[in-house]
Length: 343
Ligand code: NDP
Ligand code: GDR
Image (cartoon, rainbow, N blue to C red; front, side, top):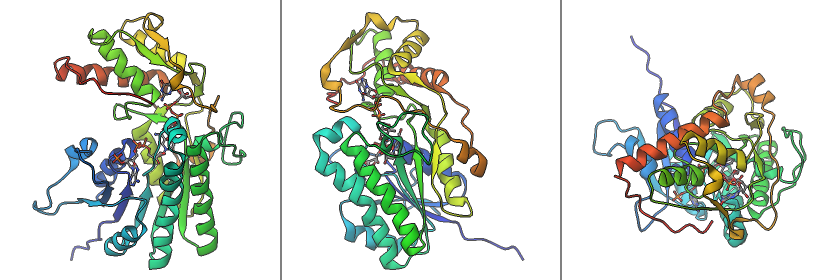
């Protein structure tokens, strides 16, 4: 007799985002049934997952999409009780730091209170599930590097403050109710799927356009900020490993390397044979009222307890992203649609 084990069932909030799309791929490759929460939008917003979507009418689909929003608590209760997931990955957020200064209340509602709505749904239903919270190095803010799990927090934006609420409420529900709830404190991680208004993608997309002759200048803010940039597909592997660990605890995920925005400009432009100083201009609208000067993470705990180690570091990352943007532009025949960028 053959023994069959039921596939694990996971919910991913933020499945249409950079990380959600890579995590969905990873879980599907491991045999999971994946349920993604998506927002209703007036235009399609599933570009990053279209290649893995299976029509519900096909035989045995394993990816299901449900309309939901982190501001709608009753919808979360309904969905969680219907789906009965083994694992919940909370990746949804208003995730742009600069935008959080423009929309602080909304950011608090989604990026902060959204997490308690999910955790309350789990508690109220009495679900036996494992919970992953997408915490951020932005919580360290003004505390100097290197940062690890013991470093004191000092957030510097409405986004960072909202993430800190989510971090603590995740710990509180773990301690108060015994929920298997884990914080992954992830440092910046990028990929060709990175949103176009984050600094790395803004740069690599501009490099492709400048090389193709469809853009002549790139307006930027603070070039001196130091970041620890890793590769998103490797970071979603760390998320999954956290929920397979035998006990819930919090982990820093980072590469322990440091580059400035200026370094990233240089690496990206040079890869395309261009001199960044000829094209980059300053625009103060890209500055933040309070900046996070330097984030460099120490991932020793993740390496020791999860066996997780990054292999793609910033110089290679810049090349991967430039190559992908150059290829995407060629595919579109050089006619990249110009979009309005205010962040
Ligand atoms: P993205 O901005 O690419 O994706 C955010 C996701 O959240 C999108 O799917 C978005 O939907 C969804 N979302 C936004 N608002 C709501 C809402 N009100 N209700 C439901 N869903 C919503 O982020 P990343 O993939 O880069 O990051 C994933 C998570 O990890 C985020 O929480 C981010 O803050 C956090 N993080 C990211 C780091 C990074 O370097 N990338 C580092 C540390 C933490 P839509 O597509 O419709 O906009
Ligand atoms: P960050 O990422 O704020 O670290 O948050 P972002 O790429 O937006 O900025 C990184 C650094 O670059 C500087 N910068 C600019 N940034 C943008 N976006 N646009 C510019 O033109 C520009 N010029 C200079 C910024 O001032 C900053 O110092 C990201 C997000 O993914 C969060 O959700 C996540 O939690 C953290 O990383 C870890």
